[in-house]
Image 1 (cartoon, rainbow, N blue to C red):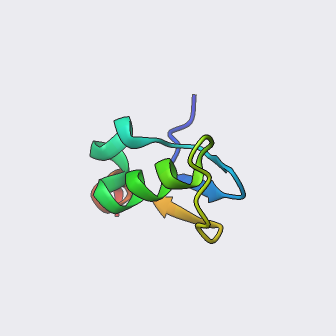
Image 2 (cartoon, rainbow, N blue to C red; image 1 turned 90 degrees about the vertical axis):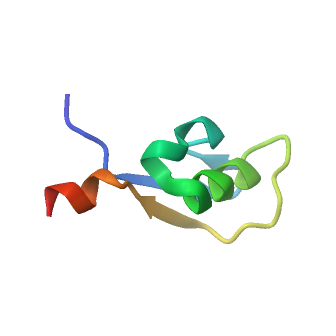
Length: 57
């Protein structure tokens, strides 16, 4: 299985959540959680690149 490096969020959905703080960083994990239901706060759609990307490149 391929390693996932990009996690999308927005429009009431997100690929990640607050439990992925080590992979997404604090801001990425918090943005994902705010964008998800039941909170569904008005977070503009976006993406987070994982911390593993830095180690790969």
